[in-house]
Image (cartoon, rainbow, N blue to C red; front, side):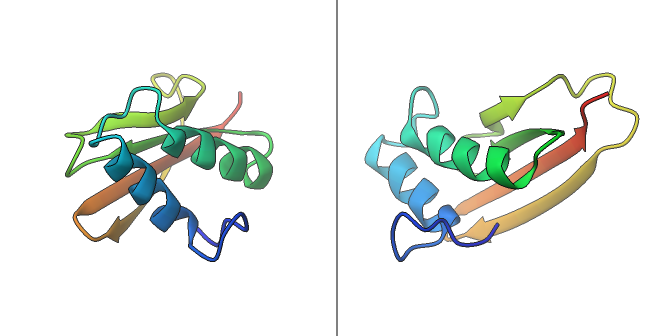
Length: 93
């Protein structure tokens, strides 16, 4: 994930600050809003699911679409401090 140009921080840094500011509560946090803006802009025509594995025990931060029946899913991960984010991406089909 690259720069999110609202501030000088990267998107990952902004998401971590939002999660830390909400005591790692994934429900209703700004981290999902930050991710949605970036992902919707950069993954047009794609579905996605972003989860955090270490601090939120695999909780979904943001999701668009149903991954259960997706024939092909690409996966990437990024660590920042004690956080490990995993992003799943698949076609809209």
